[in-house]
Structure formats: C-alpha cells, structure tokens
Image 1 (tube, rainbow, N blue to C red):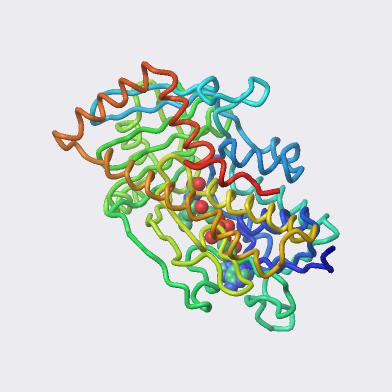
Image 2 (cartoon, rainbow, N blue to C red):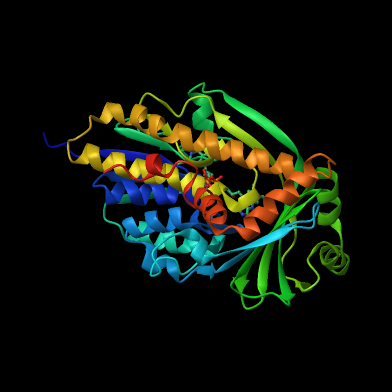
Length: 391
Ligand SMILES: Cc1cc2nc3c(=O)[nH]c(=O)nc-3n(C[C@H](O)[C@H](O)[C@H](O)COP(=O)(O)OP(=O)(O)OC[C@H]3O[C@@H](n4cnc5c(N)ncnc54)[C@H](O)[C@@H]3O)c2cc1C
C-alpha cells in the first residue's frame, strides 16, 4: 500500500511549529505553516534556549544540525549548586555515557533570533513547505486549519486557540514563582560552562552565549521578579552580583530584564480527530533544568517518525493521533513530575529536607554512575526508549 499525496497544516510558527513543519516535509508530506505573526515578529523575542542531546539527535535526523550548529553555543560543564545545603557537583561530558565523538558538549544554548532565522531560511527554501505568515492581505483570518489537510499540527503555544476550539481541557498549576530573564556581560565565568543554582527563592540558571555574555533565568516570587524588572541597570546588576557565586561578576546589562509567570500545564488529551497538540499547546513546565523546549522537540521527533510511517503506507493517517498520544504520555508525565519535584524539594530551607539534599548532592559529587543516571534522564527524558523517533 503506498500513500497518496499527504497534506499537513501546522498552526503556529514558534520554535516547535517551525521544526514540526520541517519534520513533516522531511517525512514526505506537503505542509502549510500558518502564523498570524509576520516573520519579523516571529524572530523578535529576546530569549535563549538550552538544548540537550535529544534535540541534537532530532536535528541530525532532519539534516539541520550542520546549519544550526553555527548558532548553538556548546557548554561542556554544568555546575550544580544547592545554596540551601551548601553542596554542589559538576557534570561533564563523560557523565553522558555517550561515545566520545558525540559527547563533545553537555548541551547547547541558542538565542531565539538566530535560531528562528535559520529555521525560517530552511522553511522558505523547502519545496514542500508553504509559509503563510502574518495577516492575510485579503483580510481573511489564517488562524484556522485548512479544511483539506490530512493532519493538523496545533503548535500555537500555551494559550492554544486550537485546544480551546477542540474543547480539550487542561490540568494547571500556577507556581508562586515567576521567571525573570536577562542577558548580561559577565566576568570570571567560562564560555563553556553553564550553572544551575538551586536557591531557596527558586532555581537560577546561567547560560553561556559566548564572548563572556550569558543569559540568566532567575526564578523567584512573582513580586520580587516584578521589582527586579523595574530596577535601573546598575541596581539590577548589584542585586544580581549578590545572588551569583563569588567568582561570577556581572559587568553590563545587555537587554531589558523581563519576567513571565511560570506554570505547569498539561492538556487532558493530545489529539482530537485529525488534530495533534504539539509543544506548549499541550504542555508547559517550570524552566528548572532547561527541559521546556527539548520536551516540545521530542513531540516533534515522535511526529516525524509517525509521519514517515504514514508516508510509507505503514500506518493509516487516521491512526497517527492515537499512536502519537500513546508514545508521548510517559515522557510528558514524568518530565513534568520531575521538574515539579525539583522545584518543591529545592526552593526551601526546610530543616528536614536540607540534610537529605546535602546527602543526595554529596552522593552525586562522589559517584559517577549516579551522575550519569541523572544527566541521561535530564538529557533524553526519563523514558528514552519510548521517545526515540519510531521508524
Ligand atoms: C516572556 C517569556 C520568556 C521566555 N524565556 C525563555 C527562555 O529564556 N528560555 C527558554 O527556554 N524558554 C523561555 N520561555 C519559554 C519558551 O518561549 C517556550 O518554551 C517556547 O516558546 C515554546 O515554543 P512553542 O513553539 O511551543 O510555542 P510558542 O513559542 O508560544 O509559539 C506559538 C506560536 O503560535 C502562534 N499562534 C497563536 N495563535 C495561533 C493561531 N490561531 N494560528 C496559528 N498560529 C497561532 C503564535 O503567534 C506563536 O508564534 C519564555 C516564555 C515567555 C512567555
């Protein structure tokens, strides 16, 4: 049985939708990618994402790695510090348990603009992709799916209009913490070193962007984030210096700090009819451990494998939703649970919990197999076998 011409419609050209469109096209589908924002606005955000080897594997399968490697800054060490217990440990590439040739970085950091620009260049050049970005010149709304599409991929973000239109509810837990991001010129750091600082007010990440620049991802009570956001640059840098480890000295604030609410969200179903929820339209988690976009891209990895099977006539198009959901649930549930547990366990100075954390971190610092277990789970997701692209 060989499949007829297949047509997918991707709603949302954020980092998930853009990659999903390339994945469908790579699997042999014709794709239209729709977003109400024009390309200039899609690339505009001041953000940086942490990528793990699960995202690297997908980019390699899609033939995008060589293009994107130019905009990815590798880090080879990850410093973990628990400020409540005073313990810490360092993860290195050896802790990944990957072949030496592959394990040249613990992970990578990419800024939103160059990442999206690179994805949009590939989308524009792909003969099977039709880009429909920005308001329709005829004044018609392009926010809905195309009626003739065999598959609709709703990658329209956490407020997903598609999820609402399909009456798919979600579980939601708003954290008391918000997250503030800012780019800073730093002295004393290394360009190949990232930090995850577990502070009683919330986790704090320092992500290297190259040439001494870093992005800080600062979780703290919402009121404190709003206060930090309004500070003049010098006062902000003073507050930042007070929370960073001694050897890291912030010199210059490079953009305007912005805070956003953090929440755990999970759609009650991942598909309805011919529509799949992919990326943050289906799930959102706390930024601790840099899991967010990697989890979204693991959705895309599964979609890629299933779309290929449909294109080869090995799977009926109307079975793709059920197969996608079955494969994604375990990774989504476990990753959301782990990030939530990390936030709860480490954002406090509880006298019963702090000694346990000290013990756990001392064990991590001492035993390489334990570091490998944790780093592998944070890199590939807690259930790697199930999330590998089904061929
Ligand atoms: C202020 C802020 C700062 C952040 N900073 C960081 C950070 O520094 N590091 C990090 O890792 N993560 C950060 N995040 C989270 C990160 O942005 C998300 O993980 C990521 O954007 C998810 O990608 P996505 O493509 O699934 O969704 P989105 O990026 O939200 O993309 C959804 C797209 O869908 C489009 N859309 C909406 N409605 C429709 C419709 N009806 N039809 C078609 N398209 C539609 C939107 O225009 C948008 O382009 C931040 C989030 C926020 C809100």
